[in-house]
Every structure is written in C-alpha cells, then in structure tokens.
Length: 378
Image (cartoon, rainbow, N blue to C red; front, side):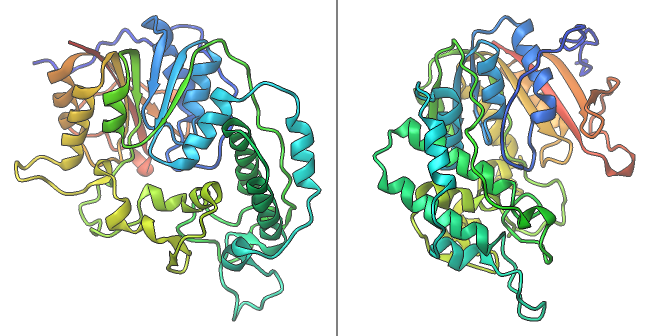
C-alpha cells in the first residue's frame, strides 16, 4: 500500500481563515495552527464540529466565530467553565459593572494565600516557591469568596471565573504550568491582579458544552461533520519513568479555583491529591503496551476513531508523542480514507514541505513537529 499522502493540499488555498481567541498559557496549545484547522472545516463544507479535547477552548472559540455549530468537550472542570463563557455567555451588559466590583474588592487572607501566596521580602534561604505573590492571592481569596456569595447563573459564574483565571495567568511566577514554580519571582508577578471582561464574539451557531471522559461523551453526541481530536500525549522517550506529572496536574490550581473546594494537597507544588499519577492518568498518556503488544495509547486512539460518529476526523498529533506515524496511519486507514497528512513546524508557524517516512521525522536542533491527519470515515 502506498503510504504517501496526496500532495494537493487542503491548506494550499490562498486564503487562511482567522479567529480572535483567548486562553491561558497551555502546554500543547493549538493557537498557532488554528488557521489550518479552520481551513479543513471550510474545505469539507462542515456545519457541525466536535472539539473533543478542548482544553483552553481556543479551537472551540475559533470554530464558533466562523459560523459552525460547536460541541466542546473536555474532562476538566476549568475547560468546561471556559467553554460555557465563550460559547454560551448570557446576554446583557452588566458584566462591566460586575468586573469593576471585583477589582475594587478589599483583599483578605484566606485559603489560597495560605497555600499559593509567597512573600517577596522572604530571604532566599527560607523562601518557599509559590505561583503568586501574596498581594495577588489576597485579592484572589476575596474575589473567589464573593463569587460564591452571589446569586449568579451558570453562565454568569463562568464569565467571572474565566475573567479571574485569565487575570491570574498574567501575574503568575511559573513556566506556564503548576507542577513546579520559579525559584525567583517573575517580573509579571509584581503586577497587580486586574480582572477584565473576557472577549466575547457573538456567534450564530448552536453550541453545546460537555464535560467528562471522551468515550462517555461520544455515546451521547449526534453525528457531526467534523471531529477534531487533540489528545494529551505520552512521551516517546523510552527512558521516561512510569511515574510522571499528568496534564491534569499541570493545571490543578484552575480546577481548585473553579470548585473552591479546598482539597487536600501534597508535594512542594501543593497539588490536589486527586491529581496524583495513579488517579489522574489518561489512557492517551499511557507509555505501556497491552498484552497484545500494541501501545495502549494507539488502542485508545483506535477506539476513539471507531466510536466517533463523524463524516471526517482531523487528528492532531505531535512528533514527540508516544505513538509512531506508522501506527497512527494503520489505525486511521482501518477506519476510512486518509485524505491528507500535513506537517507543521511549530516555531516557524508555516507548513513545511511534505515528507513521509515510517517513523517520525526528527528535525535538527530537536524541533517538534505537529501533524494533522485528515480522515474520511467509511
């Protein structure tokens, strides 16, 4: 069988569709390749789309802004909050006054300050690394308590929580996740926490938000024209130890802010106990092989492709992922026709020349490549 993808590209058109999206710093963010994802949807004449691992919801936002009916799904509660904010925001102009109220609220010492606030005056010998300076966690404590004291609708609460998270993301002292924190305070951490109304672009589509395990979500969804999947990736490093931080653990603080449940914590980063590796592991991050000898992540992707009711599937996968190109191609070809495979060099944000081998192409200087597999299902 010829494994070479067709050279005539869905992405070869002179016009690339754009979108204006918002989100937090996120490992594996698809912000830079959104134009190419949108181009696929446009070329296949899609009307309904599923964003199956929506994360920060940038892709869901982009789909909605370009006129599609969007199903946005993720297992994390903070992603559900974002999706509700950007896809189902309630009408009205009262959010400006609400945001202004939170910005003027009197800071207070509370649970978040106790566990996540650091003092800039501490000496280096006694300093405990924290994601925010105390002046901002005191504001967080006051705002988060005020939110629960108000009689807000689901959509209203999603808007103010999104505003709070976006503001915190701009004054943190991290590398973009919450599994560890910087030794020295970042310049942005000295700035004051200021909430702003989230960017909302009114759309004409009918949208739905689902939270839960992707396989359970698929059971309840109708057929869509296009399903976009960007699952979390397990490392392809054979020496990767069995115990490692999972995606759920990288963003544990956003979960706690949304729930305000004051969970039990562990470790130097004060992670939620429910984000321990054994509890928060995703099958898509699994490094092991099943009894059949196949990688478990490949079996999961196989199940994902087979179970989704969609005319087309667009699978995004990194050259740093656990599955190999050959294994992914075999899975896809069993489910339908692989229409096209495109390779994106992330840092340059351009489509590179088409290349295909039985293993991932490993560029010089350790550059990561993103691959888009477009499948027309049987």
